[in-house]
Length: 388
Ligand SMILES: Cc1ncc(COP(=O)(O)O)c(C=O)c1O
Image (cartoon, rainbow, N blue to C red; front, side, top):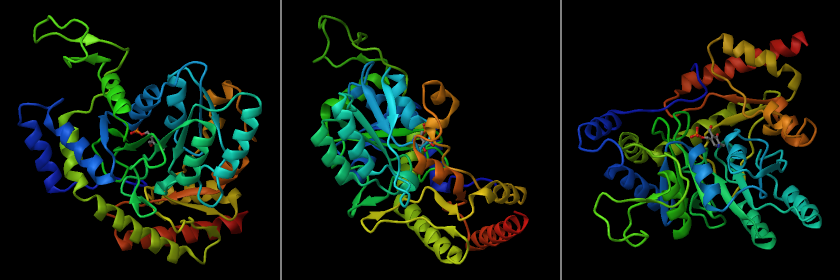
């Protein structure tokens, strides 16, 4: 348990990758398309565009939505830096909306307050990145309503949330958003080693992301400006990137997806078990809203006595237990401080951060291992409280 999470690779996954390796294409072959189609149909979206990471997918999503210099992206401070950096990549200004202390997700009430103030000064956002922290969906109906009222576009950063549900439907159907992004890093629910995917119901957005993923180049005869050329011919129509996923990664992804519901079910069982075992300790366990099924990428507790967090963390790490902290509020990173942000601006995310501790949670975790974590946590808190 040296890490808070890790991949679960079975023999079928290994065979799928070997088969891809022995095939004609190891990149840009049929498996990427198959992976895209499988995800789209699983989550209920029309289109899916794979990429080499969720960071790349977020960048592609922002570009497809027209984010550029002079425009604004808002997101949660309680996220990995990639959810905000994608706005900076496009030259846009980035700002944050504080979180709901119970769900750890961006708070729609605070969002509305900030939108009302921004309207007065003509500084409404163009894009909002709603991060489904730990695997629990944001209040997407409320966010979608505000997006219509204040005319901004919405990206769901569902890096933590593939296989999770909102109102009984898989996260990713984009009912209240323009684009949803998933991550397939090994600590996530399903993995392709590195990898990301953007899903959408908008054909134009999908086409833009597909083009920008591969240098802004097209070979589609219906799009070429010069149609009197040979089969070698291609044209670059935009400044794109090489953000492509390989067929080796996609082969792993397709194989992993067959276990998606199983992965999420087991994570739910383990999270429920943590809730029960930790109930009597001086800490707050995560709050799940009734309309959500979390994918449980992370299980984050908040210590009742935040001043103990460092000691509890160090004690558990010394015992080889891979606790972690998610997330240092993005606006407090030195890079963001240099842009003008500072501590004190988003106090709920900051208070949460000071108390937060992520406990190990992964598909192959045994109940014995989980009991060890609970016992070690209980001891670490007791001794930290006695010392302080
Ligand atoms: C919320 C969130 N967004 C984006 C990313 C970036 O994902 P990737 O590592 O696939 O680029 C992460 C990765 O940890 C994340 O947690």
